[in-house]
Structures are given as C-alpha cells and as structure tokens.
Length: 89
Image (cartoon, rainbow, N blue to C red; front, side):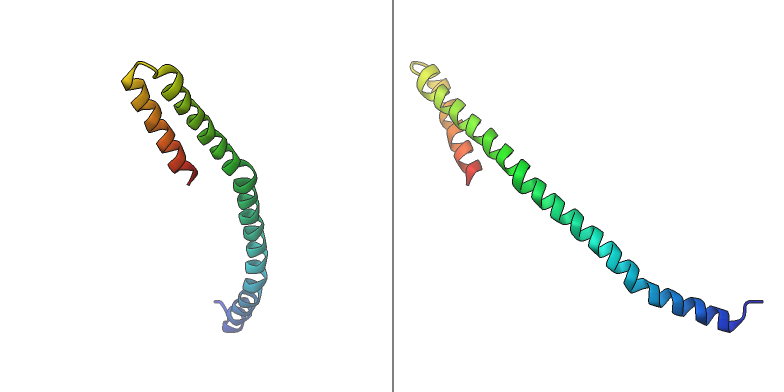
C-alpha cells in the first residue's frame, strides 16, 4: 500500500519542479519565436516584396508594350499593376 507521506513528497517535488521546467520551456519557446520573426523579417518579407515588384513590372510591360493595340492586354496589365500596388500596401 502507498504511504501518504510518499504521495506528499512526490507532490511537493512535482510542484517545485514545475517552475523550473516552465522556465526552460519558456526560454526555448522565446528563442523559437525570435528565430521565426527574424526569418520573416529578413527572408520572407523581402521575397514577397520582390515578387510584387516583378508583378508590377510585368503589368507595366503588358500595359505599354504588349497592350499597344490590344485592349484586353491593356486591361490585364492595368489589373496587374493595381493588384501589385495593393499588395505593396
């Protein structure tokens, strides 16, 4: 049969070890979140802005070069420029 004092000792040890384990996990979680934010700021956002710039330039190309006589290409180019500008914002 399990002694009540053994349960109390196990409960106290568990209660005292929870803050230490939470601090360790919190530190690792904080490091993970900081690394994710660094990746987003240094890699992901410049990549998305670069793709938006390419869409903007392609829309200008469609509007002015390919859409000189073709009204459908001009509308497609105008739409791409507008969407790329909204994407920047």
